[in-house]
Length: 355
Image (tube, rainbow, N blue to C red; front, side):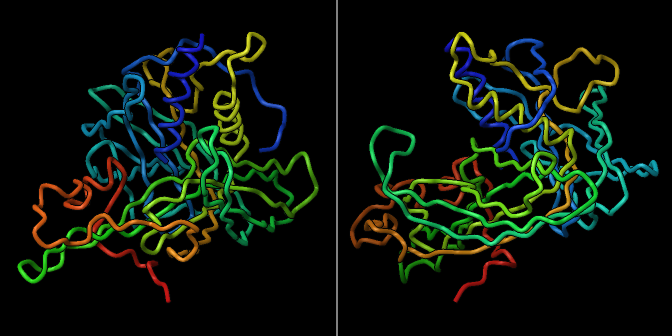
């Protein structure tokens, strides 16, 4: 039981990383079978923002490993007007769509063709309203991922949610981005390109708000916590995406949250894969993990510097005369090594602006 629970939690944490609570009535969890290696995961998010929109396709991997990206699929956005728009294959299981965004009153789905098999999601309509976040942070000394106290960085929001005649369901996703400076040996070589590393902050936390159980349109929440480490050596950006979603998507994330927080008691709901809204069109009994959601979005962002850290952050990539290059950590020599499987780029993001 414990082994199965741990395996399920690892897979769900990886699923949430690919993409980021109140109690309400939800549907029964679908217990088809235990999560096994090689099961297909399809997750996509399409919003009304001008940002890029991604679909991630992968298969579940052995315990403690990230899902394996699938890069031989064809992915299409479907509209309720029967328009079909192809996603661009970016490699490693990531498919990207730019130059288009969700429009009010429209519904969307995705279609994935993989090895001759077609997978399709249900249609999701873009919600009509979303709120705004007023973000803040706190540095605390408390237990985190262990029984020992350590310094952590915590992100909070005070949210103003809209008055709307439609049912309101909100999910928050917190993303982090940090700059990393590679080893530079002056004057023999030019400065290396910068590294911008992106990740989901506190991926096992699911932040939800159910507007059908309260009339309150103001809420305060802890959104994410992470350990203070050398990611804070340079400017560190936090991006919070408030996503207004439909009930079906909200219930999916509630189920994910239940499984993540399940402690494995004999009286608890047993661990199991969470069935989303994507099916094999020819074999509906195939278990497909993941979900395609359409959301109205509101994006808030702030940054901090190393000045917030109560501990000394040791630079590890500063050039030391006479020290051989191979004696520096690998993360000092390449952005890919520093990223460790996370998304990264050497191109400065448009929003990377600080005083």
